[in-house]
Amino acid sequence: MEEKKKDVLISVRGLKTYYPIRKGVFRRVAGYVRAVDDVSFDVYRGEILGVVGESGCGKTTMGKSILRLIPAHSGQVLYNFPDGEKDILKMEKAEMDEARQKMQIVFQNPYSSLNPAYTIFGTMQEPLIRFGMKNKAQRKEKIAQLLKDVNLPEDCMQRYPNEFSGGQRQRIGIARALSVDPEFVICDEAVSALDVSIQAQVLKLLKELKEKKNLTYMFITHDLSVVEYISDRIIVMYLGHIVEMAPTQELFENTLHPYTEALLSAIPVADIDQRRKRIPLQGDVPSPVNPPSGCPFHPRCPKCTERCKTEVPKPVTLIHNGHEHMVCCHLAQTTKSE
Ligand code: SF4
Image 1 (cartoon, helix red, strand yellow):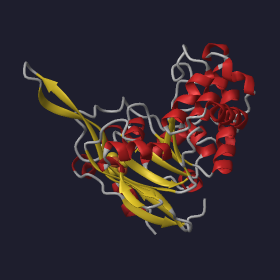
Image 2 (tube, helix red, strand yellow):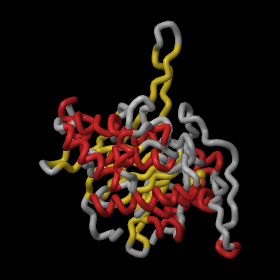
Image 3 (tube, helix red, strand yellow):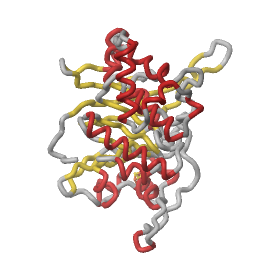
């Protein structure tokens, strides 16, 4: 994606999602799980923004907080509607219900995201009814077109979810998400439960649909190969924080954060000459209840210094080869800025 075209669809500012930990007879709040801790970024209209990180890094919570499927603790999610910018987190219920038409989500598990008691028509007509399509013949016509868009035959409508393979169910999940003509879609580990060959087909379909329907995606995954294939830009998350953000090629060719370096070094590559030296990460992601002092990555960082243990690194945006490249690491600030 061209860096020049910066038509911002969503601005996330200082978003925090904390879960209270309650203890004792009176269930008093004894602390918080800091699942998402002060993240800020823009989503540009028409792009595919990848969000990557290990399990528990807060990427899914962040996506759901943006859509208000999980309540955020504080911050802003400024959505650029045709009649002006509005904060999703402050909208009244009626206004929010209407706004949901613009924002949809495709979930990870195609086995549990479809109701087994409903035919595909029954499942897919629900959002259409909710957003005002009262005429059954119109709904049928719309669903037939949606199924065609995801390369499934029209007669799927009368069948039940258990009659489909995982890849077909995920296509149905995508068709359902697109049924209300959204402009922003979060794909939350949307291909993770599928076999590799089916993954490739669904990723290709998502790309085609994005072009055809002028969509903007946030693509959440733990799989760097997937995010490299599909994304225009990538956010790398660690322990609820954004540690690096750059256009895809820039991130892969000029990696600045030691955590991203370690993730990239673990990608399996067939060509032995292209392989990066494996950087093993020590231990697990620390608890977001009691995050480490200083840089949250310091207990696992192979480049940790004394400064890293006490001082939180501030995000810095560098310009490299004409691209904005944000990183949150003391070393990047001193050695790689241009
Ligand atoms: Fe590693 Fe220090 Fe950079 Fe954190 S600030 S990633 S600990 S070098």
